Length: 232
Image (spheres, rainbow, N blue to C red):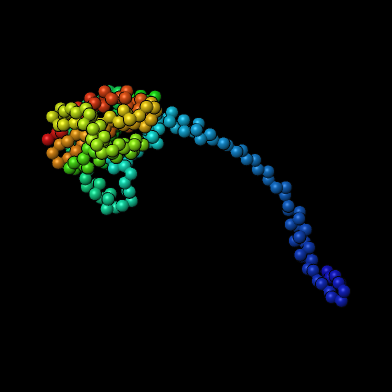
């Protein structure tokens, strides 16, 4: 088949027309696809997660980097130093019946979670070599963890001097540090901690939760601390 345009001839193979016709005949109506958009309310999703795990909110409320919060864990030398400071002290204790004990991991010798789903708390036991910084340094760090303004050195020492001191069943000196007195709101992230001194090591027991939850579990925390025994 040929066509003339001016003085030039153009030839089109018949097969080209046949292929074009076949392709046109093979065209089908496009498939119709239906989509449904699903919107998830972030607050509802968070509440659902918290309902499934009453202690999930503690992960957001409280720091989970143990005694050495706010330090740069990307520094391998620092991390090795922290790991080396952990002392696997052979301890035993009596878990409050209102709490559930979990196996320790990392720096923790043990972790306890309350069975109260409405006002949950989490408690940990850690043992570090030596004095682990001293009372003032540790209390300062804990205050910063829960956004409490650290008072001047003289006032801080006065606060520490007024904290309850007791003795464990192993006759070890214990300092109870109650930070709830710096707060007014019941849902403020709060903490009560205990510093237990023994030869060559310091044992830290920390209870985290809202101020209301921490106050409600203060007696249980104190009983746990007093029950800690060093197994020689």
